Amino acid sequence: MKDKIINKKYNRECVTYTRVSTTEQAKHFSLDSQMNLLEKYAEEHNLKIIKRFEDKETASHAGRKQFFEMTEFLKTKKKYILLVEKTDRLSRNFEDAGKIERLVENNSCEVHFVRDRQIYDKYSTESTLIIFGLDVSKAKGFISTLRTETRKGMKERYLSGFYHNRAPIGYKYDETQFGKRNIVTNKDKIIVEDCFKLAGKEIYTQREITNLINRECSDNCG
Image (cartoon, rainbow, N blue to C red; front, top):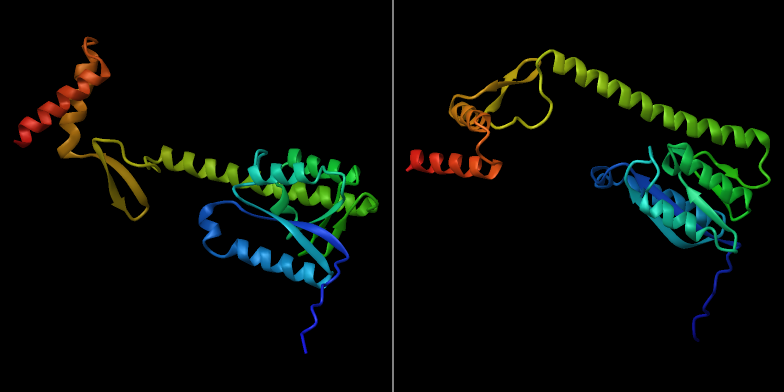
């Protein structure tokens, strides 16, 4: 007796969107975790996933490649369900949030925020629209606060003599209990001084100075 092939009938078709801010975060299973949640939701609600979109960049500004492709796809005549974990995975800026709002208003899609069990569509109540707007504002506010605090912290460290980036040639990191402070090294100090002296004569190009320094280093090493 042959096994019967059962073709499952889905209620509706949907697309998924997952996002992490960096490729480093992607290595720690965040994308897999989001996708597992969306797949489970789709299974529970008899939804067929026909397309998956995934970004590995911040949502603090517009311009995400996969987000753009997703919004273009959703502009087709057929109405799809968009599955996303929560608001800040979808947008942390007002421009992208506006694109989603226009898609919903045009009845091109309805958004299911799976983690919050919230559905946002053309016929959503005023309270749902307010919640969506507040969530976007909170997500944007978090990024703005983080950016401000980071800049403030870096400024304070610069004023204290600490350097955050890679040490320039002629300098090295001096390890202290408070962090890393740059000091001039004995080995490269002369090279740096020679570069400035040659540049100060205003008769050499940058390439010529580089060649002179390289030749001098080779002669000394030889």
